[in-house]
Image (cartoon, rainbow, N blue to C red; front, side, top):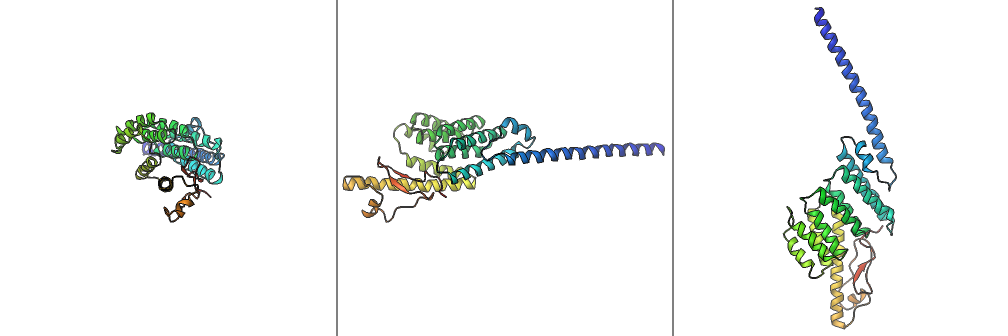
Length: 289
């Protein structure tokens, strides 16, 4: 009887010690988690937390913290774009450093690579920085055709380097899941420049393969703008062929019967004929407030 009592007493002590240990662990864990989230939330708007600190602080929640930081950089960068007509180097550095941290935490998280490369190339006029991020994506996602595909497009459309563009398009065409037309497009890049039409084809493919609704919305707006540029430049050339000189204003196309009205830029800008007779938009494909 005494032996049974001693066994029960021993088990009770072990349960008590285990319970106290669990309570202590939960208290420490809750405190650390609260402090970590508080620190992440209170960092300055355009301050990126280095991965050398974030990775240890994230504990086993690296993927969760990467998602949080990605949401934060989307929000902050979007706010900067909506408030500023001129993008500062500080904003560019913030996006680059934030994506470095996010992709250190979760190297195979594709959305940050996509978001930052689009924003840097299209909105911030920094295609070289976009390609640097895509180079990291190539390393971390070696069997994904998208990093070399987007990198090749940047070389072609923004950097006007058809040779490098063809190189990366060919690389992309050999990877699993790549669209069948990539190899054909790569051969054309070294022959002549289609510019806006190539941009439209690129954006259409991105819309088909992108799952983030916010990014898809921006891509569709951008595609609509590019299609407007294609249409307007087509009529500018036809005007020249009919009258022997280029129109000075887009309103001349309406007066001559080429258009019923000038299309509206979905970003809120205004289309203009520049001195080189190309058509551009004052929005720079950035949504206006």
